[in-house]
Image 1 (tube, rainbow, N blue to C red):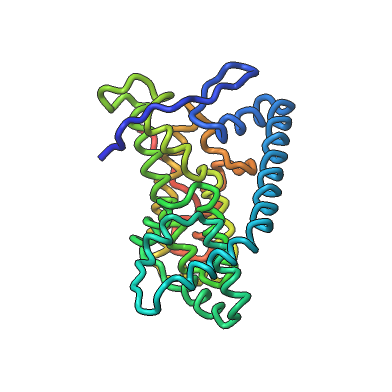
Image 2: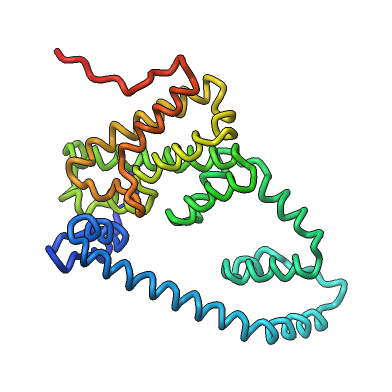
Length: 290
């Protein structure tokens, strides 16, 4: 089932006029092809982000006291016997507000950290990992994977990383169908919904680097020590690599991570996986010549 078409405002390179689906891919192009311009644009973006964070921090500090008194006043007007639906309240709060509430709860009751850790360590199923990723952008998804490793939840990290990799594989293969002309009704791949979807996910090079990071840890290697899991991940990475090589011929920039991570990281991750599982192939098989 292919995603429905949406029409977006495209990002155009001011140096050469090339068109991209979003600003992140445009910046990758500028850093690779127009390094001086890319450096300037990236610097401007960093300054804007720092200014926004400073403004948010100042606003939170200024409103903290008022918010506390408002909450206290509101709570005093609620009868002890009242039934309050919590879900609608949580739905209207921003992520920043939820973070502040958690920090205040920890400050008031340090034992709350036990509940926080228990929730963070709760096992993820493939379905719950997919639901979680739908709520995150590419940057937040990468942070969530690394954070799970950091807190000692390698199985959850692998479940999230595998879900990201599956989404990437599907997006790459859908774009390959467009590039090969196997989909009717498409005008061009440049303004296709498939390219938009691919650009919204972590780049193939970054996903390969994440697998390298994960397999480079003792806990990550232990999680994939059983043969069935190792074979499944090896086959998944092989499929991503094959589709990425086809996409690379048309739009190589979309495969490069924000830190310059290249698609070759996928093959390197496969080699790491093979090194810890001797029955797996040590390198990707070459197609036989006829």
